[in-house]
Amino acid sequence: MARIKRAAISRVRKNRLYKRVKGFFLGRQRLRQAMEHSDRAKRFAFAGRKQKKRHFRGLWISRINAALAPKGISYSRFIDSLHKSKVALDRKILADLALNDPAGFDAVVARVQAAS
Image (cartoon, rainbow, N blue to C red; front, side, top):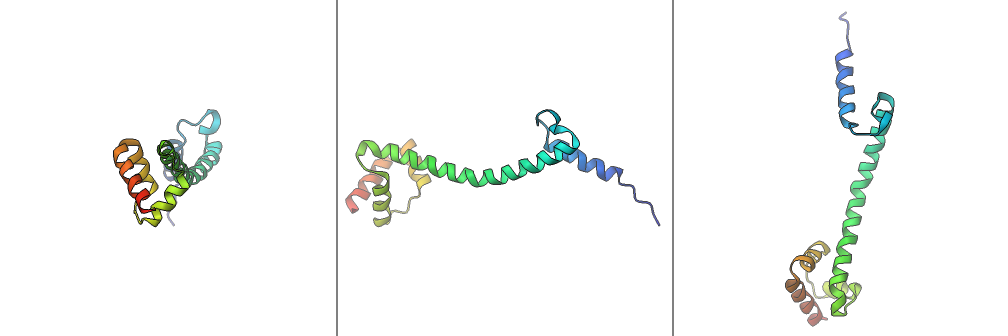
């Protein structure tokens, strides 16, 4: 039977791991700790991708609410009126309008107020 040598395969795996943990602090770049902290980083990255969506939604809501405050409309009533008037704009688009195109946002608010 042929003899299997695993040194090359093992080196490739280690190099891939070392590349992934480059920049980690102190001993977390060495083999055993690198494996543990790489797995930990993967878990945090997975959770972070979910949290990112929540954080952005909160940011959009804050921006919309800040743009509505001078007009004397609460965020919740605006969203309710938006749904009742069947305006199909999501929070991301509304926040972008409020930030970059105040005139366009005012037009949307006027249309929603006229419908309610």
